[in-house]
Image 1 (cartoon, rainbow, N blue to C red):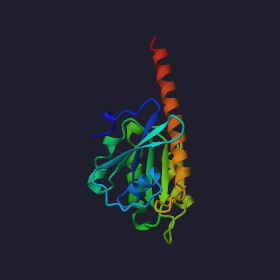
Image 2 (image 1 turned 90 degrees about the horizontal axis):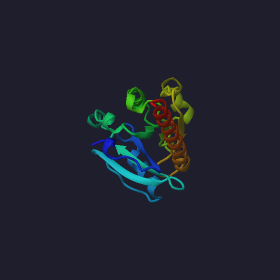
Image 3 (image 1 turned 135 degrees about the horizontal axis):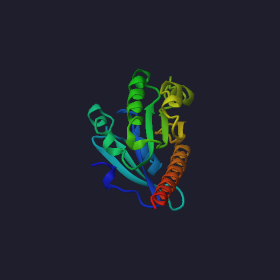
Image 4 (image 1 turned 90 degrees about the vertical axis):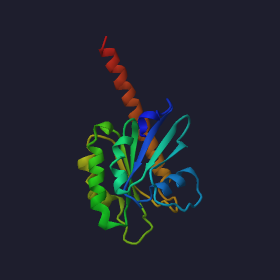
Length: 193
């Protein structure tokens, strides 16, 4: 299990999609893939899907279940991640603190040091949903992501609103991260001579 056995192609990157249960991760993944409406059930385990993100670049999305027992396994999926896509139910204010704590734990993992983060502030269509600025503050993004590229994208998985922008942002960040990592490896090899 985990990403160590699923190396991205030379023209792609692994994207780990995490968030609490019922945040909308699977619905988002299906909406990225097609514009159809899907009825989803809570993910037990994980879903994997490859999505073309521009010319010659494929993102392999790892949608990992968000139940408490699955969260204990999240770190297994972080190795070789080219980006983290963290999904938040912006209308569920009572679980926002729990979501912030889980994100903070993920970001402390050495496997994803400097890996870019895109937070999807999902369920913007629901009454009382917090906007991207409020989610940014509640998750303390500036504090926890000061060492990496990050962005908070408001969206709605059921309508698809904001998803094209999110996919573009993830692809851009993943490309940049991959390029910087390859440059670092090349420099490290040159310095070893």
